[in-house]
Amino acid sequence: MLRLMSGKSKVVIIGGGFGGLSAAQALKSAPVDVTLIDRRNYHLFQPLLYQVATGSLSPGEIAAPLRGVLSRQKNTRVLLGDVPDIDPVSKQVRLADGATVDYDSLIVAAGSQTSYYGHDVWSQWAPGLKSIEEATTLRHKILYAFEVAERLPDPAQRRAWLTFVIVGAGPTGVELAGAIGEIARQTLKNDFRSIRPEDAQIILLDGGPRLLPSFPEDLAQKAERSLAKLGVQTKMGALVHDVDRGGVGLQVNGTAEPDHGGRVKVGPDLTIANFPDIYVVGDLALSLDASGKPLAGVAQVAMQQGAYAAKAIVRKVSGQPQQKPFAYFDKGNLAVIGRAAAVANIFGVHVSGLVAWLVWAFIHLMYIVQFQSRILVFIQWAIQDLTFNRGARLITGVAPTDFNFNREMAGGDRAVEPKVEPGSGTKRDSVAVPAH
Ligand SMILES: Cc1cc2nc3c(=O)[nH]c(=O)nc-3n(C[C@H](O)[C@H](O)[C@H](O)COP(=O)(O)OP(=O)(O)OC[C@H]3O[C@@H](n4cnc5c(N)ncnc54)[C@H](O)[C@@H]3O)c2cc1C
Image 1 (tube, protein in one colour):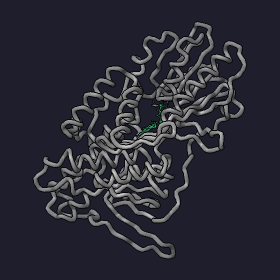
Image 2 (cartoon, rainbow, N blue to C red):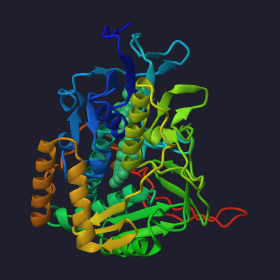
Image 3 (tube, helix red, strand yellow):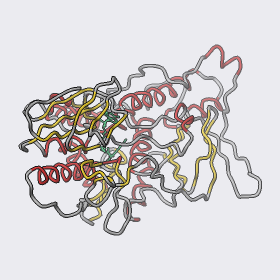
Image 4 (cartoon, rainbow, N blue to C red):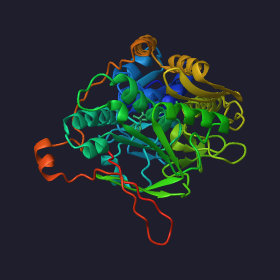
């Protein structure tokens, strides 16, 4: 067992993302011993992951070592470890390597996984975007597709390789689609001899009726127009029912059900039923707003919940009455589409274009944890905006979709043309496009 001998109340935090880090920092001066456990040794700024996936930023620029971030916080220790299990009766956290850590209060801020709606097999063709590993896999797939297309003589095959499908038209999907549009139209414009990168097809799909559902209608329309300028086609009401090597199967005019699978239901004080010493915060928590709607999985919610749980523990330890139920203070939503193009809803004020982009850039820089990373990201953005160049365009590692030229040119077993198949009974379109 890993012990602390100070005799102070023991607070264990699982996860050093937005929720866990905010909780740890809020306990900085509290009379408690804090142990933060994470399976990776860094805090990851997920909102900029898509910029790693599209070659704008390098992984190190959006990650900060947890040990360094918390080094001055004397009541806090950081442990590297994976937590598969908690024993709430004996109040112990169990690590995958067999070690145990005791707690008096526990904050679980372990985030969420990409949901494939029960079809985890899709992940090999369509990686999620939650970790640095997934971002670099995606970067590999995007850049590699242009390389393969450059070597293929057949226009239909080229077109297939230059078709990119993004499923999910929330802020991340919109940002990713805009960034791929910029890569194709601007960054790579002069880099190839056989293909025209700007001919790439970029298709943004969503099962809902419109993109950016958490934004007001007028901003969603502006975002759609900005995406169209970058060559992105949007297809709403399109439910994915299949993803394989050959493409993405769709059911059009379907209705997407929100997926809350895997989230842990918490009460108004963010604890779980029957365990008043276990708080769950951030993406992992299924927490409801005043109107009974689940709060979105965004960084602001995680940070505010982390700080709330920390405060609740301090009050408990110092014998003060419980605080009021958690209430999320919504400062607004932001999504960037491309260079000097963004949409923002800030305290109900709708902003778009360059002004929204400047707000987006300022807020993201402000929330990057380390000062050094803020400077590096700022410099990268400045260079990129002046030159259209994306410095981190490296194809690293291997992806399951890598092309074997000799074998595949001989066999040619890829589906190369988007195809439409009428289904039986219901009105159904099935569009097959390569899911690189
Ligand atoms: C691509 C992308 C773009 C986004 N863009 C935005 C945006 O623009 N604005 C916005 O507000 N939000 C955005 N979000 C959402 C935001 O990043 C999340 O809401 C936020 O990260 C949630 O914080 P969290 O602390 O709950 O989880 P996370 O930040 O995911 O942190 C969870 C931590 O727990 C650790 N962990 C997980 N399981 C274990 C375990 N078993 N044992 C030990 N450690 C564990 C992980 O390593 C990780 O460090 C985006 C998310 C993604 C993926």
